[in-house]
Image (tube, rainbow over all chains, first blue to last red; front, side):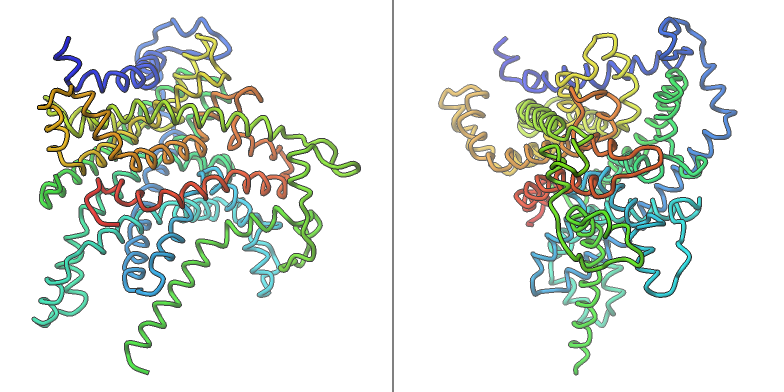
Length: 295
Length: 286
């Protein structure tokens, strides 16, 4: 008993209990449900086992794969642009000596916004009738309002803009922290030896920043599903499912169509997708940390 | 002008453009919250507000004045109460549980430590909407759907991993020798923790708490499906009440948005220093 009280497990036990109740146990229920034709309107169907029928149907479901593909494409483009913009912003602020702290604080502004608020403010800006953007364009002679959230392509771009606005600052702030920690000597030495700025950036700055890029990516990959809030608010997956992401599809299938069995099968696939993202970046992070040996 | 001066000017132009891009959407929402409906709908657009009104906030908080829109259709005060209760209680519990866990990971060596740490972090990677489905089924069976209790335990689980991540980093910054001395003097591990490490990491734990509060305050995907009525709906979910199939009450939504953002704004400014060092495992000077 004394050994237990002095050991780590007594401290971790509450965490295990909570996570078991709210995460692991529900995940088991979710797994079971995905093998049933459970519908909220017919409670008995929760106990009917149908094997892989839901998954088989999903494999042949065109709408599902479109949403799946769009989600992967959306995340790939969004994360890459966020990284590039974040790096650009970090480099820019790093160059500024006057009021640098104030600027950094201002950069954090989007991080305070709940994703649902991000969705709302951009829905308001992109509104074709009274939105800021169309009002602004009208001043420059664009009389016909542009249907930002009605046209399929434009709607996807608009959502992407909102997503990038809300998450770029995570990259900017963390990469800035990395930039500030870079020792000055190697950079000075390289310049004396005749390296140009691009060579300095590529060979000194970027390798040093790598762990910070992976920290940012890991943190970001933990909440990619925030995009659900934004899409739900801005378009609800419309027009005609053209902005449907995996998560809005799950929500519609489960809660609107009440097909819980099918929704759980979908959500298992989405969970694996998220975990794969996180796993990849966390692995990279651990490797990078070993190299810089922060521990 | 020298080349350096031109460079400086370019950098500042970039910075100002950036600030505009970051601030405009939020500021526009704030301004709209104080404008009369006529101005919002006006064409061509009215850029400089002609008069400001607090009507939206009055309607929201006190049910509106005579002759205006009548009683507020959205029970914002109930939502505010729910938001506060749920966020504060879940934060307190999550910080307590998470600090213990963070301490275990920072100070104890045990088999498979990194794997357990990773597993706990991984629970955060599960999309809220995916997790909400089985929780919805489970809570319906248990009869705790649409209650504070149900949402609070979900939020605790949501916040514990992140609290462990942060506090683990803060405890690592405290030299081990301090508690080791206390333990050779006869303290148990828990006593050493209570008297030495806990007071030293107070500010770190406080900022972990503020993070947890912000995550709870801002959460939407889970609550929107677990909360069904004014009994447990929070402010973020209430925002959807202003939209119906064909109409959107823009000024009302803007007013509520201002309401949601102000506490988040204040709290984030309070923890911004810890934000960077916490997220980078305390490995960097902020």
